[in-house]
Amino acid sequence: MPAIASLEDLKSAQKDLLSAKDLNELKATFKKWRRIGWKNVCKLWLEERTPEQLKGEKE
Image (cartoon, rainbow, N blue to C red; front, side, top):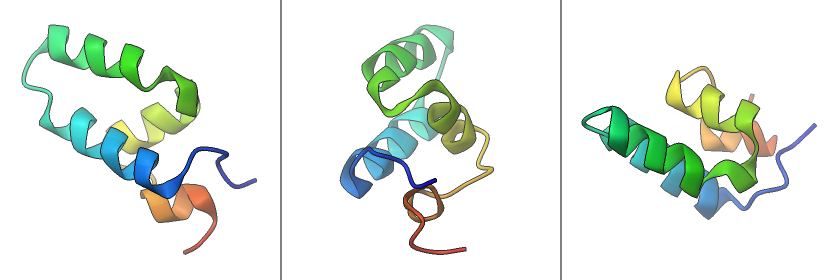
């Protein structure tokens, strides 16, 4: 099932997650992007899925 969040939000969330330098930045990023869903945040952070894959645009 494709993510409800926009592709731009997913890309921004991924950028923020991967650029977090310490635990406090990471916690703030998780709080900022919680509206896209915890599973989606984790998949982006762990690089298990790309924003395009979460939207169902690319396999």
